[in-house]
Amino acid sequence: MEENAQPLFTFGVIADIQYADIEDGFNFLQTRKRYYRNSISLLNSATEKWNAEPVQPSFILQLGDIIDGFNNPRKASEKALETVVNGFNKCKAKAHHAWGNHEFYNFSRTYLMDSVLNSKHLESTSEFQSAKHVEENNPEPSYSYHFSPAPNFRFVLLDAYDISIIGRGEPSRKYYQSLKYLQEHNKNTNLNFPPEPTGMKQRFVEFNGGFSREQLDWLNKVLTFADNNQEKVTVMCHLPIYPASTSPICLAWNYEEALSVLHSHQCVVCFMAGHDHDGGYCVDECGIHHLTFEGVIETPPDSNAFGTMYVYEDRMILKGNGRVKDRILLYPSF
Ligand SMILES: Nc1ncnc2c1ncn2[C@@H]1O[C@H](COP(=O)(O)OP(=O)(O)O)[C@@H](O)[C@H]1O
Image (cartoon, rainbow, N blue to C red; front, side, top):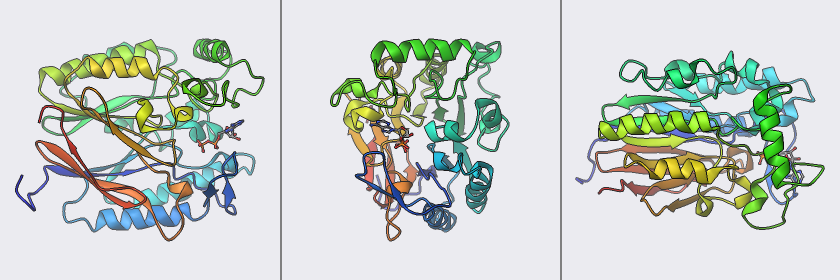
């Protein structure tokens, strides 16, 4: 590739802003500092940087946990959301919003579906109708969609809390299905407490979730379409799905099922997630890059945690800021 070659397009990525207008605190284990109030300043620095990019980002991926659960008991959820959305509105590019556990600590699914955090109106519909109908008659649909910002490139946003007990309320079918599944794997009274202190089973906690069969069938259809059209696909959601890209306590419950769908297609080049604030990265056995973005909330005020991705025919180049490292992501077939 020529040095200084123009990218086909660029986009921004940011995760786990978890804004709240409260004093700094710590994570549950008291091992990591959280800068709740300052996270909005880091978002503002990110939008300034994106707006000043020579090739304007076509869109921003916001990987979930946009505001912190501490807003809820303070009755500050809507105000905090307004503050962060105003931050995103300063950016020239539109944001695609994934939903994480903290969205559900603040809002119901019904509220989210009608809120500014539902970016499904940015979905691509014209070229691919057949994947839509799967969820159309579903009384408990997932929040998932796909879009194509440029010919031969597609992005799929998944709902990692489709099967979950925090987003799904009683008396819904998915709530009981999720509770049964979680209790089969975790015998603790407090389901946020991991069933085992180490190892892969730690992921069976209430603050995680998973993907329904219907959603994975839909994903399979989208990826089949993308295979047939020689597209390159990036899949994203709040939860990581590849063990080497994250601490196991942050993995989606049924990550193996999601991986097996991705691995049965040639088109997938990258998977992006948040949730693990320490971040992570690896390339899997099929050549898919798994990027877990460092969380803004645990980033000191003198640093930052966001990236700009430059997309080319044969690779994506991530320019990281602060805790997010620069990376070259060659597509599997190159
Ligand atoms: N090891 C744990 N045992 C019990 N509860 C936990 C544990 N870790 C997290 N939690 C609880 O789970 C919820 C989500 O944890 P939090 O650290 O806020 O998640 P995130 O990493 O998404 O910010 C919080 O209510 C927290 O108190």
